[in-house]
Image (cartoon, rainbow, N blue to C red):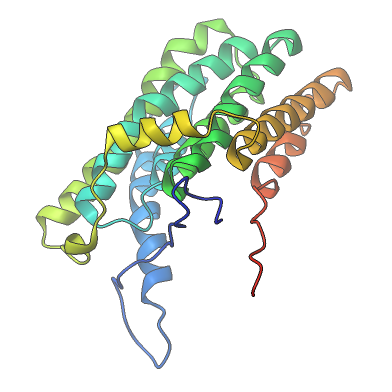
Length: 253
């Protein structure tokens, strides 16, 4: 069984070209990069005029919100980005609150990491959304911020995600309707059913969630206990990008 979906069907990433030139299909890569980079660039330009300890939060929020919908048509992408924006903001705020204490940072990362890993039970896109939230928490925990920065981090990271969603909506209004007929319709009942059916140790997605949360928490605890305050976040960051659920091998009769 493919492990990216509880029903056994993996979600494949795909994208229609925004630019197309030359003999090779460079379009999808250029399209994905442009659709994420433009709002991030606009956010960074905006933040140059902000005198805030959380400078860069809008651009970071825009970047993280851009990941889950990379393969989706513009309107679907805007919906995912708008839904992810407040979650990314909340994770950033939680990171500010817990980052100064390993006793708080470790369990926070364990819970958020486990939830992110469990997203594979629904779909690949849902899992990427969870990874973006976990990454927001990880980044905020690794920054030298104090409690007073909690609300600004929440608002600015959320604003970045909403900026990304607004850009995708503008792209859709401008006429980018490629792939709209192929877009999957989100089903909350189906997602809840997948989450419930996989809530068992017999589920590979559930076991991956436990491993993922535990490994991320161990990484956060390691750099906290070792006093690696400036660069230690690379430990859990590497875990976040490397650790993936193992695909079961199919036997051929």
